[in-house]
Image 1 (cartoon, one colour):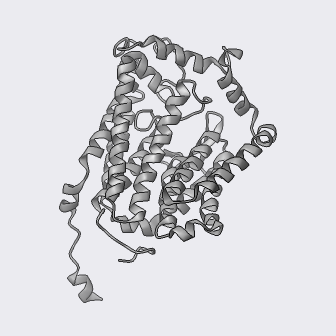
Image 2 (tube, one colour):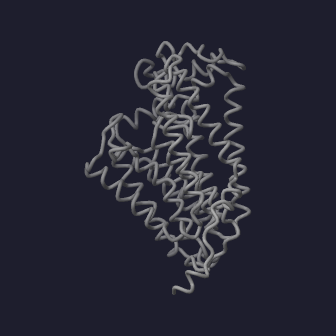
Image 3 (cartoon, one colour):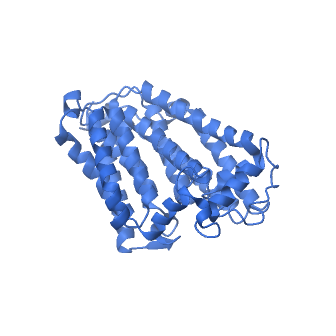
Length: 382
């Protein structure tokens, strides 16, 4: 055993650093920079209370991202169930009130002393890890058997049920949507999705009557007609649309937005930060931000295609798909295309959990690229 350790070459950190996909780091930093500028504007041209704290979080997240990237992808394969289990335990801790904090009418945060962590955010990427490990090495024959779907269904159902209890219907739908996308890429047959969607459609009336809470029903009804309660449930989306339209093509200019300055725009530093950006920088600014996201997504898919293992490909695509869902939900929500819900815009909205967890996901993406040539078997063996 001693001889084997002596013969093994020490890890070459410098070599790994040279292989880091710095374009991912640049894109993540660009998104964070946009967020800091918007938080500075939201505070009326001041670093406090949002931009300064977010800058510190970005610095910590940058270190976390690079550490995650340096870890061999085979280790992430071996740790997948452990990471998932840790996130699930945190969700249970929030549910039973162990260190949980209530905010915006729901108990979603876990007080770890040095950070208020939202376990459901962490679950989005640990779920990617565990599902990628499960699907790794499965054959097309396996995909055709219903029994092989039982384990991933259970892996998705447990955190989804806990998130629904918080309650956070939007996050539950994002967890489910991310798992569906990963299963599709893994090779699950289309007719199984068709059956699942048919069952969901059949259950909608029952869910509406017995499971949705009053405020969730109001969100759906307000989405269909915001003017039915313009000073109540429909206020947020009406003000968001006004701000989006007032920005025009080129916007009013940095620090010149009126909707957020006069406090007509709700949650301007978090959920509605894209609306504030569109008011100040117009259609051009909004499309520019979407262009940065699109570049990140396309580069993520390139990383996936270069990976020599199914696990690496699924992790990379899962990370990209998860971030895409968060971007889509936030922007569609502020534009009134889907019912309003609390949803952070990755790397741009104010919030420690969202930023650090997104950078953890970006680190996984980078790890796939750095270790793209590492091949291993169904159980992680060389």
